[in-house]
Image 1 (cartoon, rainbow, N blue to C red):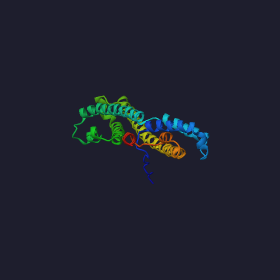
Image 2: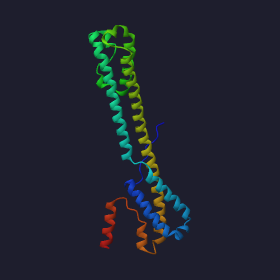
Image 3: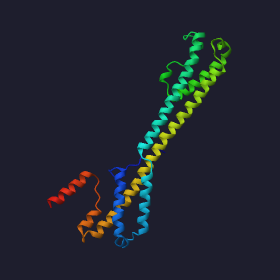
Amino acid sequence: MKKQHINRKHNFPDADLHLLCLEKIGHARKDIKEFEKYGYSMERLKGFKSKCDRFRDLPDDHELVGEQMITTEKKYQASENLKSAIRSLMTRVAMKYSNRTGRYRKFGTSKMGDMTDAQLIFCGRRVIRVARQQIDFLADVGVNENILSRIQNAVVAFEKAVNVQQDRVAERDISVERRVEIGNDLYEQLVVLCNIGKDVWAERDPVEYEKYTLYESNNDQKKARKAKENA
């Protein structure tokens, strides 16, 4: 069964979430004696801080996309190398047989530029197989094992490049999901901490109470600031 997509529980960037957590942790550290009355210990606060540090050190999407782009570029180059090797052979085959003959079409290289990665890999293997079956007939146009080895090596290199690229795509998906999961956990812990902080200062000090208030966006902060100014 396909895993359900995980949604973020907050609507601000991960960098802002990290800074918010550190800011509120700093306030809670100063108020730890009050927090302990709610069963919220310094050890728990340190655990929250450690999770923030791990979150900070996770690779972000810029890094992952960049790595994916690098592997895509390498795959493209490997694809071009394979097509070039195949075309070199097919130039020789065309010298021997008309490109309208069954012997030529047996290689299946028409519309090679439109092939998917999987189709191109299969094409490369087919070309080697068919050429080897006719190698005695193609020897006079320069087809030999060196020509076929060039194609074989290009097929192997391209298939490896395809697999690496697919691995990077999968790794990015997993990393993004993991980052969302950890971010959601941090946000939940942040809400708990702020709720305690607000309860501590609700009837005692509005300035300290405000330190534990969470705003989901800059617009929310502006509204709150404007409300204070008009009060």
